[in-house]
Image (cartoon, rainbow, N blue to C red; front, side):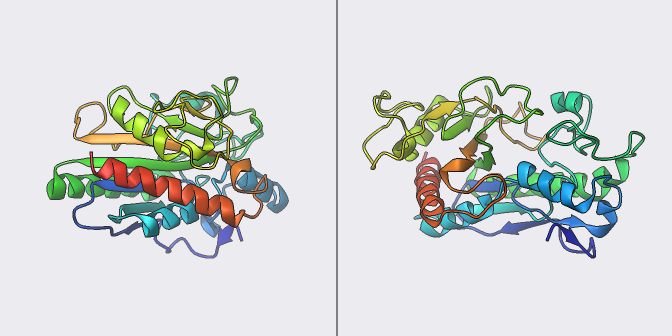
Length: 292
């Protein structure tokens, strides 16, 4: 199902972790749920909307994060979006700073992944921003504030996936498409955190990559291959605006998983062994980042 008869369902969930954990696993794009009242503002027919959800949803990433949380020595906190990014995308800037506005994909999308109209040309996005985007942002800000108050720091690990083949909406999709893309931010992502991620996802590195680097193996874990790269095809991280670019106690890293590593594309079922392997790798990263 891609729609819901009511929009009363909570738009996000904050799942508790260990009191001493600084880590928040953020899963913003895993849901296909579009409330019925929001659906009425989308111009696509049901079949076209289902196809768009196949392309735009980071399917099964909530499951990967759940596996990781269960495997961690110190359980992380999890912040999960319960609605589709076609309702609002919580990771966009809500104003003209957002570069994805150029392809109709700001906080409220007006175009599809292939550039077709998603909403009417004169669509007023402000009600959706007020109803969904701002409460989500406020809750995520509170979540980070809670970790800062409890342990003096916060580590946001953003869990995403991306298609094997470039889609037309991608602004920076002409570079490498590794099995694991690590999205970084110059202020909030340290070289140490990138190194930990490279080692945690070592089994996905290509043979011959330099060990101990973000692109490297850091050891032999069985060799699933496909490569571990940085900032291609997606770059950046999610940090609540209150802390963005100003508070170094907040670290952040984006994990982008190429979908053929663990599922049938587009929008198909997950491979259980792929989900388990990714969850285990993510757990290694969570434990290492929590111990920094």
